Amino acid sequence: MILRLALGSLMARALTVAMTVLAIALSVALFLGVEKVRTGAKASFADTISGTDLIVGARSGSVQLLLYSVFRIGNATNNLTWESYTDIAARPEIDWIVPISLGDSHRQFRVMGTTVEFFERYKYRSGRALEMADVVVMDDLFDAVIGADVAATLGYTVDDPIVVSHGIASFVEHENQPFRVAGILAKTGTPVDRTVIVSLEAIEAIHVDWQGGGAIPGQVTPADTLRQMTLEPQAITAALIGTQSRLQVFALQRAINNYASEPLLAILPGVALQELWQIVGVAETALVAVSGMVVITALIGMMATIFSSLNERRREMAIFRAMGARPRVILSFLVIEAAVMAAVGAVIGLGLLYLGLLVAQPVVDARFGLWLPIEAPSLREFWVLVGVVAAGAIVSMVPALRAYRMSLADGMMVKI
Amino acid sequence: MMTKFVSAAVICLGASVVHAEEARQLDAHEHGVGQLNIAIDAQQIAIELHAPGADIVGFEYAAQSSEDRGAVDEAVARLARPLDLFGFPEAAACGVVEARASLEIEGEHAEHEEEAHDHAEHKHDDHDHDHADHAEEAGHSEFHAEYLLTCADPAQATLITFAYFDAFPNARELEVQLITDRGATAAEVTKAAPVLDLRELF
Image (cartoon, rainbow over all chains, first blue to last red; front, side, top):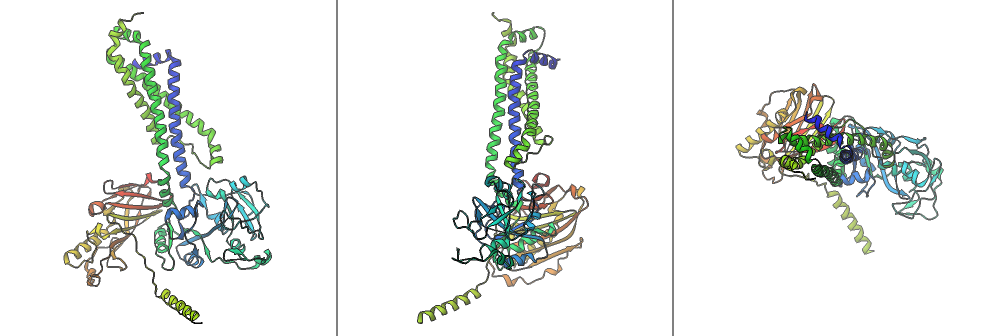
């Protein structure tokens, strides 16, 4: 009975109510959207590397090792000697091991030396493998595979020549040994997009004519001679490891961390990513706080609308009272009205969110490499919606209590 | 000529110094905080526990008095019963395949060892080692334990309750590293909240 009256009363004031509902819907959509982006960003971040059990490098900190080996931010404190690398690679727990060697650059992008196995082993977003947008893997010594951002920024296509610079932000070029773009990787949203990948041997090859950090003047080993040479690196920067069994990961990690001949560090990428996220994650809390404020603002807006409507509805309330409605009925009448508005707002907000996700998902994935999954509302989101309705009912108590006290006396004395 | 000779001698000396040098390293050690590594693969769950002696028995010197030795023996025996310390839901039907616990004093190995294979009975007779050797050691000591469990229904093994904190009142916190088919992650379990919900970790 009260519900029907409440609905009827809302319909009668459709325009004002629609505006209030719209405000709530937008705020709810914003709040849930921010939640989606936040969890999506966290997941995308955590999915930067998957399928790798351990990352090994020189002993430093786990976050630092992760930063330079996976995100190509900062530099290694030390290299990992080839001897230790082969030692570790020979251990029985190892299923696969992929060396990576960093240190050279091309324009603003890092060059990474590795083996062909990298393309097979590097996984992101829960086990997705790297895909070639443009085919051909490294066959020749001087073949390079470039990430999607490198290709897009520098406008490279397959078969374009690339000259690698020595070091990072350096003007010394390895101009005698140009590379050829052999393949372009599809966009992944990971740091691989911003990397030029060459073979480990190629990294050695371009440094054959170098000594003590500079090119030996006049000495140029022809490319074909380099192709014939056995080029074994002295050192690499880090290595990605997959183990035979998950149960052996911790034992292998401890063995590497206690490796006596060289101070090494083995990290679990997932754990290091989490540590890193704890640093970055402060922004996350700020985002949630701001969008929470928006919801509160919308609810207070609704309270204001109900307040101002009370004036217009004095007579309505008085008639209800005169017809025998108790003050409690008036109270619940207003609270139900508000709860209905908040509920409709929440549902429309949810609809807006999914509409927005449908439109934005491919764009956001392509532009920012941020994957926003479209899935049924989580339990958390459900409670957020319930919370909004409950909060709507609670804030409406303020005007409702006023109506409760004033309804009779006020309404009967209306002067027109 | 003289300078050449001297520098050669210095190089030789340097070389011998390098040879004499040994690798020195010590693990980090924080009282109240232990490390727990859990790896879950199909039906098998491998668990490793590293806990400071201070957490488990309340002291880290080499046990000499019969009272201290008794405390160490008792602690090792308790650590060799993993399901009493780390509880999995009954529905998962987990059993112990292998449990091994020992006390290690910095640099030394296998002070005490307790092994249990396939629920074998825990015997304390073989612990009459001589502890006097390590009397002078003022270093830290750590209890190490390794367990292998199998669970009939690993999908139900979603929650771990840590009776560990009741068993060892000095322990305040465990830093947990977890590997499952969804990757690796880390968490902290404290005495105040001695439960780890594996579903919430990913």
